[in-house]
Length: 598
Image (cartoon, rainbow, N blue to C red; front, side, top):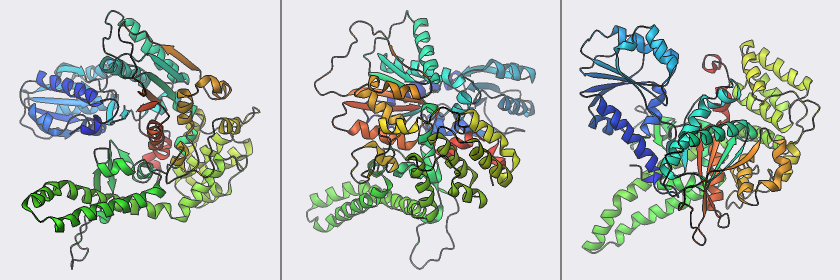
């Protein structure tokens, strides 16, 4: 099932297996038949750790979503609540327990990823804490998404760290990294940039001192850990991702490795039948490197995907034609044995051709082209200091608010803030067009630095752009030679910093690092004697890059590209608090966006 987690440089299945073992141990603590009541947000991340079959083996007979009122009927001995430590969820649990008239049941509560005194206090106030046989925690910090990708899927991480000054996520990050080191060995070198990175490193070093007696005797798998604050590079997530995977996420949203697509594009029409029975349920597809074709095309610039699909179609077609050449029994038998793999490849090709067609409809539209043109003008420093007519037109046509906010924030970031009259104009137009309730959102964007007033200090972005070569003219989209192909010209700042750290080192860009927010630092962790790696000739080093506050699929692709470069000498594993895109990121900073966005 999890073969794709073992294919990379680091076997991430070890982490998944450790999480499964803990889950099994907890379930076995609750003897007898069980029903699980899920906090809905957790079902996706848990699906990546354990399928229903594993739960069934441990006597889980029913599963429900946590809702107010009475629990659905279930003839089981144990009811287990799997929840995040949120006060509002405790009120629902109390309601469930009170309305359940069965006295013969045992109740259990499992907090993910940590127990919370406040939540237990709330249950006590509601008079139900005594009803629970077990109150426990299930430490699920880093979840393996792919062979080179880990995420905590902490949905409010950026908002908590940069808006509410809440360091809970940073504590969970430090704990997650300690778990990782327990399984994969101590990471000898730690580099970081940003205030949150500094906090996480300090917490890790403190935790290591607290466990000083128990030396980790595992040969280190990672050579370096790089901690990067999202606010060091606010520009990259705002830009439209132009890789295949990035555009799927921008258009439909990838959630816990799955995407939901319009069903009509995937309907199997039989000849002579009308379209009366078109499916209405969205088509749900899993996206990871376990699928051969997806692993091949996900990191390509979208302009190179068509040719790759066409080439694959010819190969599959030729493979099916082979059946005419099979004459002997042995040849026929060999062809038949390959048939399931060929049919899976054909089905995969059909799916990705349909997805590519859906995305092509978007990318060839005038609106997409106009939006991209404005983004690229901002990134190259064209007219960033005055009201942009395209943004003005979008507001007057009451275009999607998130699209407008992304462009505004991008202009502000590329100009080191907006002039008073420009900022006031944008704010006034937005409040008059979309409603005054968005004043809170604009305030949040200002607090996090995405939107800001230009002070007298000079705009450092052009210097950063030139020094780090963030804009590359004529980026090669078909056979890329630089990470800038993921945005058709723009090289993500976060990934450039990672690239420079590997070679020639951050000392070469001290001036630029000072222009970016937060401290930069280096720490070393002592390894026990005998655990220093003896590097083989030509063996690559392995760096874990941890994005605090979220990472986009295009940045992940850029890091994969660096791993594959022959002369880089470095392989990257990516970890993050949350997988994001510009829209989901801006939405997380809006106050109650679901009730306000049409």
